[in-house]
Image (cartoon, rainbow, N blue to C red; front, side, top):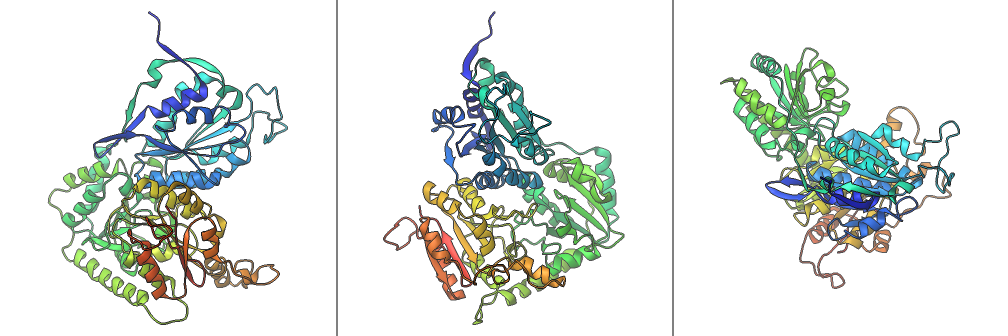
Length: 590
């Protein structure tokens, strides 16, 4: 009996396979790969582009402006989808691929899935050296794509068409594994892409993927329960893994039932709404006085879905030296850190089973009210710092307060680098779960605007991404304002003009070095000058507005979040993009 086959080029087979992978989100079957961000060039334009063009109605391809930024947009999309639906970022060989390495590092550090596909040199080496080929004198097999090995969870180079049969399922399984989750990279040799092969028809049968939920070891659960039951002042630290496991409600229910306060990491912020009764604020260097006070007194810390990075622990100054840690994490590598009792398992399932193991135990009934009192004091402090004043230059706290106040519940706040992450982690009051994205695992300058594009795609009109950045980050990577204009995805960009890299300038001077090479005025420039961010944003098709006061900002935000604008040029959306002077706000035109 002959096996049924389908004759396709390797590039066509790869694309057909991606089109037949599915996921389930809230009971709805959806494509696992929602689309492709692509820039075509040497190594992918003759074969991969042909394959993608033929399925553009099924697997849409979006043209980015920079390989790094489009991969960052793909990462943000996956983050918004809680790692259940993915995007592809495709690039040519050489500099195009090299541009994506930073994005791969961002995904790797944050445990976020993205499929990176790059063209590669010719496997047969006959035309070597080809355009954009980086030659290594001692190893002719090395190309630019080898740079991805240090920043991806899965790496492969396809030199024969049949190799994708085993490689693609492994790449997907890695990206969807809660323990190994991260970017997957596949390099496609140029001559292999065009080779036709008789692929098994079964390879293209539709497949529905789900996220596995590994259960914790029963002995470790018993040990964790015993440690908690002996605690006098327990504390829960909620990390990003709580969000990716969709464990927010169960963790919050567990905290209230057991009387344990919850504090959040930067990645975990947004699992709870700001005013949830168990919420006691963000913890760590950029955290709240309430969370840090509780951390300093806690004797047992239940860390859920967090690797306890230094900004969370204050480089291990936030806790009492005798405090004991229980770490619930799907990744063994993270669970065993810092001498914690490692409970390796899915956050949702493990919290459910830990709850069962605790019987009728509850923490000291005075603990949660104390946390609520400390958090109330923190909120009063926020109110004081965010209050509108008539000062000549608005503070970051005031800007965050205005943007937060005028945002809608489903709008998502996005930040990543500079002074903004600390300000929004402390000052942003989350109105709905899963509406906060501060990329601080890699703190990648340039993530923000690209991420706004990815979030806008993921939200599909259910809320607006609001990007908050400084002028330094804006100047580093702003081209996806143009991308959102082209594709019709709505976002708001708030740019605070600090005259350069202000937060690192502050750190530099705090450590005794005079201001040097950070603020524009301290750099080797002919004369100090200012960028007109409004005109720059307008040149890319966005509507823009310059704000000189908090009142201006509030008016601009009100217009920007209004879905029924009065702008005659663009009747569907009013899109203000504010630039320097001390705050400018931007939103793309649809």
